[in-house]
Length: 279
Image (cartoon, rainbow, N blue to C red; front, side):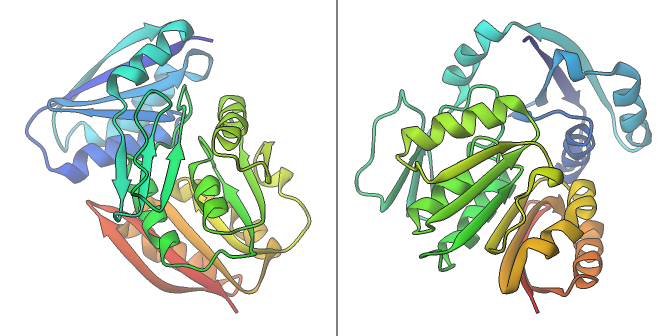
């Protein structure tokens, strides 16, 4: 399968304006983004790209700031070369070292996660993934049953496993993410992660202690009721993939309908990660 690379060039702008474009593209099926000095690159499977839908989604921003884009085709065989050239290792809160298979290990970190990203989203570099991992490091996962929705590479489920969770389900609608989660789970010796391909309809009829949902606002709102059905009373749910304004208040209101109550959040640039507890 080929991917399309949309190269966005932006004029003078605020950081949040670029994030508006990225959020709109995420809702159109773009699953990977790479920032550049002049803008950013966005990637989507060629079969999922609809020019008219993308232009409609971006139309509201044409009068707010200047931007343009060009479309390139990337053959699947070249994708790994793209990632190896651009993917750099990173650390989270001096506790987690995230690297690819071609980077050197750093044994001084308590937790190391090896990710072979391929065409799946979720290497820890995006602000939402970073914040989710920071929140997770403050939580107690020992012996917990965990659901990771929109798992991408499986990075959050893998961290939960390393933090002591003993029963994990990781779900993504993208078959590439599904395959990537299985592969990365093996790389990290997290064999107790069960990967499923699909959306809310494949969430097992069981009860989870914790849910991790790093997707986008509209999908979170659509899946909220199902999250509440499978989250235990006093269970924790962590949301990210949206902005502080206006998204956080919308998420709070919808979650409250299902007795999932806001506790706290943190912000990085204009992105937010928030913690809720079910009554």
